Amino acid sequence: MTVTDPRTERPAQHPVDWPAGWRINPRVTGPAPATVAAYASLPVAAIGDAMSRNIGALDLTRYHARLDTTLCGPAFTVRVRPGDNLMIHKALTLVQPGDVLVIDGGGDVTQALVGGLMRTTCLARKLAGLVIDGAIRDLNEWAEDGMPIFARAHTHRGPSKDGPGEINIPIACAGLVVMPGDLIVGDADGVIAVPLAEVDDILNKTRLHLQKEAKIRAGNQANTSDPERFDAVLRAKGLPI
Image (cartoon, rainbow, N blue to C red; front, side):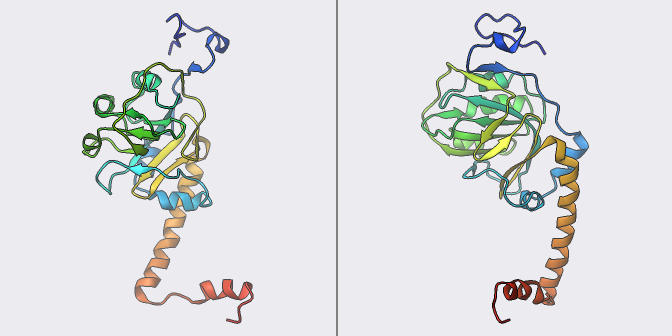
């Protein structure tokens, strides 16, 4: 991909050619399609359990209507000035089908970063969904099937289009560290990012965790759960169980 300097529209030969606060890096190829498909059937809560239960986005709201909708795909990251969506528009010309647009808007909710018109573009570009540390608008349109979206809030106030912004860089989104190409998974419980280098390992750990949960669930249903599972912990805390 040819990277252009926004000041001149000429090819940027070296990172130093970019003005401060502006950057467009090439798209990072994410996990294999088969890996993405495998994660799409896994609960975010189970993935989080396999990642030590201390990773995941915080304080985001699901704005698509269906609880059973899963967002899953490689991260295409954008960082923008709060309340400005110029570089989001640019990113939408560079994404590939199946990408998840992950936007660091600094948590600002005074102006919406995306709305219904941009949703139309997202559908045309066949995005897997959006995760936004910022606000959105046109909620009735986002509630329709076809484009999962998680955001911090909503407002009727629209954005500016002045920049600056950066594309395909490491970002922080609602407490979640996201690298370009990381696997993003979102469902009714929330959103998580699996580092690209760890997708196979975390996939195996998640499957093993789900097998463990299945055994516990069967015991719960049969009312045959072993009380020692928790009594041992209580005794270790000093309780005379």
